[in-house]
Length: 288
Image (cartoon, rainbow, N blue to C red):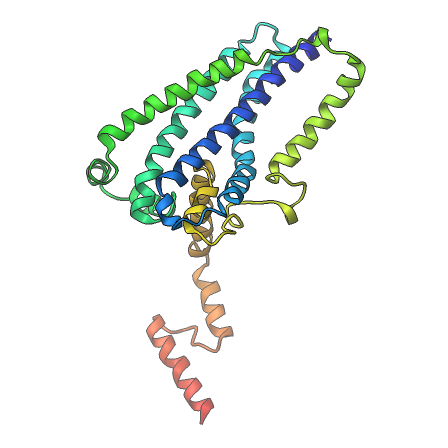
C-alpha cells in the first residue's frame, strides 16, 4: 500500500507537468502567430483551428517530456522510499524548459529567413564551418541578445513551473474515498490516457495527427505554427532518416552486374557510359 501511495502522489505531479507543458507550447504558438500576424492579411478565422490542431500535436511532445520525468522520478520512488523524485523531476523539466525557450527564440528569425520552422537547412548547416555558423548566428539570428533573452525566458518558465507544482496541491491518498476502486482504475485510465496522447487526441491512426498531416490550413504561417519545436526537430530527424534510407544503397558489384543484365545491359561493361551506349544501341535496333 505504501508503494501505491507514493506512486499515486507522484503521478499527480507528472500529470501537472504534462498540463504545464501543454500550456507552454500553446503560449509559444500564440506568440509566434502574433509576431507574424501580418502574413494572415486580417484573416484570423483559422487561428482557433491552428491552436486546436497544435494542442493535439503538442500532446505528443508534452507526453514524451512528462514520460521521461515519470520514468526517472516516479517509478524509482515506488521501490526506493527516499528517492529524490521531486528534485529529479524538477531538474529535468527545468533543463527542458530552457532548451525549448532557446528553440523558440531561434524559431522566430529562422522563420523570417526560410519561411518555415526548423527544416532540413539545420542538417545542411551542421556541415558548414563552425566559424561561419557563429557569424551567421550573430548577424542573421541576433545571437548576442536572443540567447540571453532565451535563458531569461527559460528561467521564468522554470519559476512558473515551481509555482504551478506547489500551488496545485497533491491530493493525499488518505483523503481519497473508495480507495479500492481508485487503485483498480488507476492503471487502466493511465493506459487510456497514454493512447490518447500517443495519437494526438485520438485513439487510432485514422484520426491521429502528426507532422506529416499537420498542414491542413491555407496559411503557411498557421501550418508551421501547428508544429511545436519538438515536432519541428522530429520532422528534421525523420526527413533526414528517409533521405538516408533512399540514398544509402548497399549493393555489391556482382548484384549490380546482375541487375544490369536483367535490364538488358552489358554486365561486362567497364563503365556506366559503355553500358549506357550498349543499352541505347540495343533499344535503337529494336525500334527499327
